[in-house]
Length: 165
Image 1: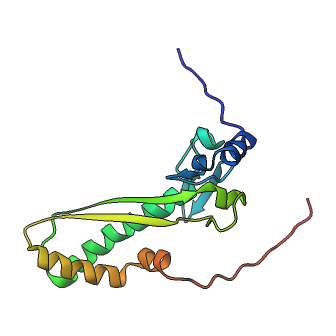
Image 2: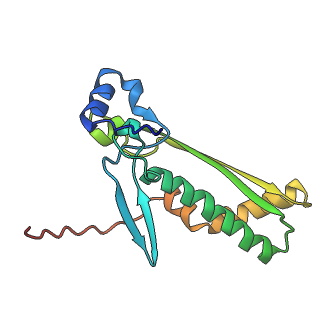
Image 3: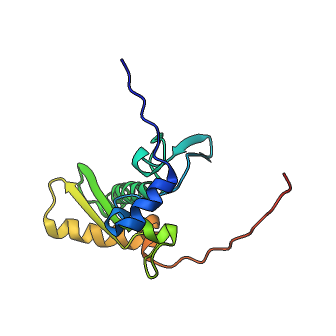
């Protein structure tokens, strides 16, 4: 026996945030509908959980950002451990962010549509001293592309192209 749960209508999600602002503060974001992204030869399903009107076929866009930060840090730790001659057995990360969907939905002035804060914990496993791993952390933080993207303003050139249906 299987149970099929329908996605929550977007209007219900919006109304719940209007009625109780606490409903807008989540560990994710409201994107509205499922999307497929193509990155080189890779397909990536992006969606929202059912509680937010999605079908939960994949992570949502802001979860992708958090995963990008964690995985880029892990890769950069591996690279810089090699460059610095630091013994490193394993890199783990735990990353979470605070977001209020009222910003995305334009329901309250002064609420950001993106993260209000991100907490990123890196766990390094290996034989080196804490001091040596702190040196490695400084090098990684200075060279991690995704950390740079999320921590600093990046100029974005946007172009709108409208085509007739």
